[in-house]
Amino acid sequence: MDTKDQIKDVLVKLLKVKPEELKDDAKLCDSIGVDSTEMVEALIALEKAFNTKLSSNEIGKLSTINEIEKIIQSKISK
Amino acid sequence: MEKVAVTGLGIVAPSGIGRRQFWANIKSGRSFIKKITRFDASKYPSHIAGQIDDLEKYSHVSQRLLKKIDAFSHMALIASELALQDAGIDIKKEDPNMVGIFLGNAIGGWLYAETELRDLYIEGREGVSPYMASAWFPAAPQGQVSIYYGIKGFSKTVVADRASSLEAIGYARKTLSKGKLNMILAGGMEAPVTPYALLCCNTYGGLSSDNAHPESAYRPFDKNRRGFVIGEGAGIVVMEPRERALGRSANILAYISGYGTSCDGQNRIDPDPQGQQLARAIKMALTDAGVTAEKIDYISLDGLALDIWDNSEIEAIKNVFGKRVKDIPVSCPKSMFGNLLGASGAADLIITILAMENDLVAPTINLDTPACPGLNYIMKEAKEHKINKALIISRGRGGINSVLVLEKALQ
Image 1 (cartoon, rainbow over the protein chains, first blue to last red):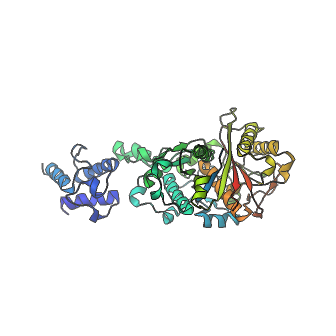
Image 2 (image 1 turned 90 degrees about the vertical axis):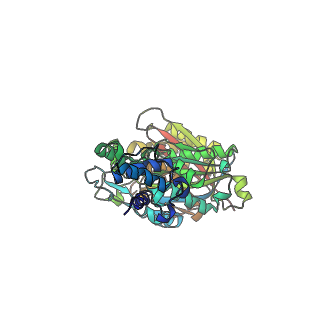
C-alpha cells in the first residue's frame, strides 16, 4: 500500500466514512465534512500509522489528501 | 397558565423501543429486570438492572456519530426521532429558532467516560479520545439532538437527580406558555448500567440486592420491599402550544395543564418523612392546572421501594386527597423495567399518556401486600379505567419534589 492509500485507509477506518467520499484534491472539510475534533483524532492516528510527529499547523481540516501525503512523505523520507 | 399539548412520544426502555412494543409489554405486566450481562457485575451487592441490548437495531444514527457519543445521547437521539415521527412533524419545515430541547438526566454519560479514563491512566494523555470532552457531560444529549436536527431555539438541560426529566418537562411547559417557542422536545435519558455508575448507585445504599430473583426484586409499596433497581432508557415528548397543535390538526395525545415543584431542605439523601413539601408540590400543580383534588382519577407514583420514600409519598397523597385516596387508582409501572433515574419522570408521563389512550391503568408488579394500606393500588395486572386527569409524581435525592397534572385531550 502506498502512502496515499495508507492515509485514506486510516481516515476511512477512523471516521467511518466511505472510501469513495475521500477526494485527493478536496479539502477534508468539504469532501467528508470533517470537524476540528475529528481532525485531532485523525492527526493522532496518522502519527501512529507513520510513526512520526505531526502538528495541527501542518495538517488541518482545510488540508487535502494530496497535501497530507506530501507532508508525511517529507517526514518519513528524512 | 395555558395548557400545553403533547403531540408525539418517543420511548426507549428495557420494556421496548417505540410506543407499540413498549405498551404491549407494560400492559401485560411483564418484568424486564435481569442479571447484568454487559460487564461482570457479580461482585456488586446489587447486580440486576433493566438493560437495553439491541439499541443499534432501532437506530438511525451513523457509525461515524456513534463513536463520538455516549449511550445516553444515543438513546435521546432515538427517542427524539420516534417522538417527531409520532407527532407527524417534519422538523426541516420548522423555524429552527423557535424549536427548543429540554432534557433531564442525573448522572451523565459514564460508559464513555469510564472507558476513556481507564485509557488515560493506562496509555496516558494520547490514549483519550478527543470526543471525551463532548461525550460525557449531562448536556451532551441536548447538544447532539440540537446538532442532528439543526435546532437553534432556547434549550435547557436539567440535572435534579431522579426528578430531572419531569422538571425539564415542567420548565418546557412554562416556556411554551409564555409564547417563547413553537415547539419543544422534552424529556430525559439515562444510561446507568456501567461499572462506575452502578457502583455509585450501590454505595448510595438504596438498591435491592435480591439478585437471585431479578423479576421480583423491585417491589414499590410492598411490605417486603428492599429498595429499587436501576434501568436505562429515554423518554421524549413533543410539546406544542394548544393553539398551534389545534391549528395544524395534530393528534393531541394529552395536555400538560399543571406543574408544581418544591424542595424538602432537610437531609442530603432522605426526604421529609411526612412528605409535607411533596404535598405542597401536589397542591401547587393542582392550583396551576385549575383543577380540584376531586377531579384526579389516576396517580402515577414515584415508588423508590424504600420505607422512608414510599411512606412519605403516601403521607403526602393522603394529606392532599383525604378520604378519596381509597378511590383513586394509583400505580408504579417502573417496577417492570427499573428506575430510569433522571429519565424516570418522562417514562412515567409516557406510560400515563398510553394509559389514557387505552383506558387501561398499568400495574405495579411485585406489590403483594401494601405496606401502607388504604390506597387503590393497581397490582399485578392492568385494570380498565378511564383516566381524564392524572397526577404524575417524580422525586429526587435530598428531597426534590416534582408533580405534573396531565389531562386527556377530548376529541
